[in-house]
Amino acid sequence: MKKVTARRPSGFVEYLPQQQAQLQNMIDTIRSVYELYGFLPVETPAIELAEVLLAKGGGETENEVYRFSKGDKEYALHYDLTVPLARFVAEHENDLSFPFRRYQMQKVWRAERAQKGRFREFYQCDADIIGSSSVGHDAELVALTIDVFTALSLGDFTVRINNRKLISGFLEAIGLQAKTSDILHAIDKLEKIGVDEVIKLLKSAGCGDDDSAQIINFVNTTGTTAEVFDKLRGLSIKNETFSSGLASMYELVEQVEALGVDPSKYIIDFRIVRGLDYYTGTVYETVFEKYPEFGSVCSGGRYDNLAEYYTKTSLPGVGISIGLSRLFALVQEAGLLGKNIQPVQLYIVNFGSSSRELALKTAQEFRKHGIKTQVDLDGQKPEKQFKYADKLNIPFVVVIGDEEVKSNSVELKDMQTGKQETLAIDTAINRLKSIS
Image (tube, rainbow, N blue to C red; front, side, top):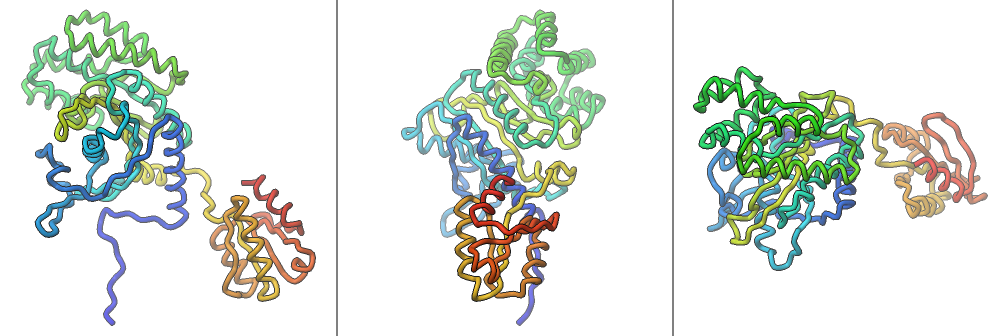
């Protein structure tokens, strides 16, 4: 039989059990915070009808989608979770209660060039609120994001907030509204390519020297929230879009403060505009202070009409998205994951047929109390069983031999210290529960 080399396609990552356990722990942590805020779980098919998924059409998206035909139908793997959400809301509109709060944590696929930290198959963890224009929801997502990254314990971070109406209104006020899209795309690249290169992009978009200088000065406005608001008022901009954005930002900050959010965890940053055209109001990016090279690890914003390609109903919304696979790769390389997750907490060594029955019963007792337990079922020699447990980094081993069968007890060994104790089964269970 001809052998085939075992290999994966480029850009499709997989993990050993210890790494997968760490990734799963991050997923569980994010899910628990989403649910604390009252978000409901949704899962949509990996495959969508191509005409539905690509209803908007155009851009680079079509080139990055995995597509295939089956019979007379053309299908595509979803490339994000926002478009499937739009389809889901339009299809189930009459069955949902609005505002609809959903979280979705699934893999998505993009046929783009695979590179370090960028995969063709990856997890996204999204939370969106659909069917409301209330800025309160925008504020709540700031608190949610901060709680998520606090719970993940990956280091100091900052949520950077802007409102695209502010920059749009500013551009209208200086007569550049026709160039807004090109200017926003240029500003979005500011931190990646620097001021000089962005000025070149602005000039190629038709901005003069004075216009470019005004734009750069505006987006580099910094300070505390109070200082930023003072500077904005000092500009004396008479523009309806700008005034609307400023009022929204005031309200957002007021409600973020009412939620008791640590003010050191968020800032107003006009460099954050998000490159996607469908954002119309609040926009967010979250960065790690010590690792600016990570870029944004959680982003999102407000959009006017999520499902305009599928329904006549106006469905404004706001949401955030964590690119979990990329985040996991970054923090893994930076050594931020902390202690290893123990997929198995206890291994039960038994000495053959005479102790097997008690070993199996004991394993079930530990499992009933939430202790992740594995038991030897292969009749290996005890020394091999200990080596196996040690290789898997299982922290505790229970030994059940003839003496333990007679006394209905177990010998508990701490694999790190080597300490051994003979204990009643209930006592051993309580000991491990107190440690875990």
